[in-house]
Length: 278
Image 1 (cartoon, rainbow, N blue to C red):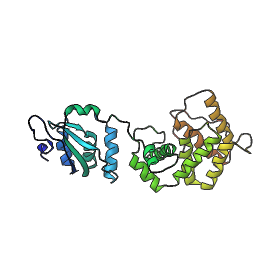
Image 2: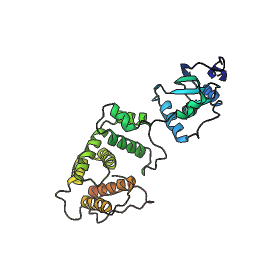
Image 3: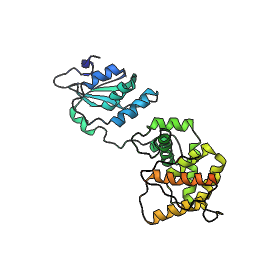
């Protein structure tokens, strides 16, 4: 691509704004990035997130533009352009030129739309909890069992996961029901484990989370009573417990129930591997 094609022609010291929809190829992106002389530090995770959506065909042109100043300097869009190169695919983009350089100060100033926001716009109920469960299920399936957040799903990846596994909506609903009875476990963790356990034994999962919620008719030493006591104790002591540890508590409890054994205490060291549900 000729870099002059994104530079406006001066007109008495000024230039008119132009806007056009262009199929940006990796080679064109490389040429545009040569004009990236004044921008914020590149966030590699954002590039990787965008690139996955582009490579999977989930990238939609939403009106956000690649923006250039009057002198041709790239003002906004470096992450998207780097993602085009990483994905090695062509993407339709809106290109705007002829902007005053000072307008860069106001770009990306708004709050970024979250997955929960996107799901709410689609009419999903309990969208914030549903979004949290989708993120954790996606990360679990990627092998990130402790939710280290080195790689999180994009909005598109979450919506694709929901389309593939609509039963996760039920897991979000169950998480809300359990929370209304027993407020000592994070809803996102309850919903995530509900989905994972349902893959193993849907019938036993129903019984398991009913008892997690009400604790009814369980004998002394039952794993679910041990879980409930541990969760209440940590809340009373005002301890900060990361989500992965609550995940481990629930999985250890589930495994003990499946094995038909008592569980006197639940321990999960920070450096211990995550137990796998069975």
